[in-house]
Image 1 (tube, rainbow, N blue to C red):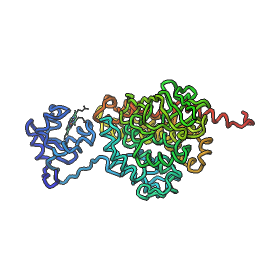
Image 2: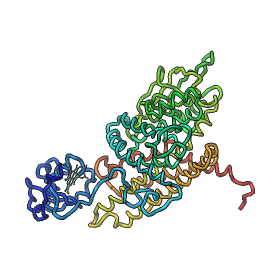
Image 3: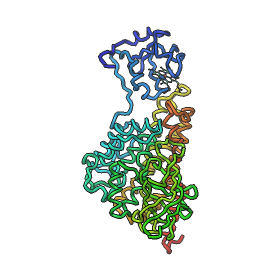
Image 4: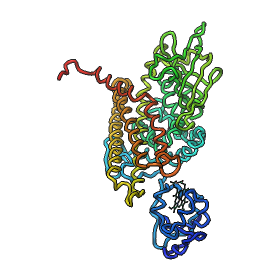
Length: 519
Ligand code: HEM
């Protein structure tokens, strides 16, 4: 509705429209005519005709029961007929590209008046641009695709390619050479792990876990073996395909038979008699992006042990969707390889050296997952702070209950400690060679991922308790909480189960114990 059509009313005038058939309410200094909408109201007519609501200021009642996005929808916004004389609306939803003012809703470095040793002005400019891009391009698609379960839209993948987001999500390195990054905000040689952390954390703000994985997360784990171990010919063909968003690649390691236990994998690759091809047979399970991937980075048993081979979709390759507890937008697949013939040139790294190819990939994958988990937890803190402020129980805001404040205290402490440890590790990554990272950071990253995902699950449980029935309802006020609680275990399983990672961290520490260290 154009604003000039809106009239100005006094509160007394509005109060006269307080009966069935002539029903107005005030919400945030705006006047709504609900006379006809009343019978369509999902919450029923009775609550609107109630004498506490009809003709009155229903701001508090409205925000106790609806998200702001309800009233921002065009079909409801047009119920507005006027504004209250001399008053201004103060409530607004997320503003594109803006930082939240809710305490702890942003990491410290993005909070007014606080400092950080890690981020430069360039990181800040980069964050602004990525946030705007996510708010404008990705978030609307995330909400729609999470609902209909289709893969992320092609126009989003293409828009990401245009600013080279796919390439940046592989981390700093030679693959960025000559590319214009985020419209030139950051030079390829300046791009560091804090820039990548920013991308991952801004993406996580969409709060749609299945879609998030659908957004080419398969490439983040499937492409590095090609980048680091592919032959020059393979690199020249596959890398441009993937970073331009034209083709998708996924990592196919885990099987119904084995996950973390790579030695237990059953997919085989046998050489043809002339030694020119591999013949691959076997199955892979839980392969993220598998249903729509064009390339598969596949872990195989070979005569020499374990070997990683690049397979293209074609004869003998089949993918079927697996129903998981998050959206099919992630493209989670069961993959079968039936006598698939692949040139030996597609071998990634040395034959029998697949374990090293995989291990060198794990640190980055797990670090990306921590970045994402930390940001998703923060989103939940923001939801809980808003909800406990606007929701009244026993006549007072929910946060007037000490037990609620204690849950929020624990949530804040968890997310802040995860973010601080993460930034410390990211700083180490910026200052270590890839090889040093593999030897010095595998343990800390494993431990932090374990800590982050345990924290995330505790926060999810606390949030459901705070939201009550709404925390288990897919629409309405608690929709984000329900979604988070349902999908949070993905972080704790993908990239290595919690106990395995914690153990890895401690074993690495034990190996480094000095022989002369005694009590
Ligand atoms: C412009 C005014 C209003 C619009 C457009 C509107 C719209 C909606 C919508 C779309 C829902 C479905 C739930 C959701 O998506 O969040 C809903 C539920 C509800 N509404 Fe309204 N509503 C309005 C005003 C009010 C007011 C003033 C009350 C006063 C008490 C109210 C009480 C409720 C209740 C009790 C529910 C059910 C909530 C639940 O299931 O948790 N609504 N409303």
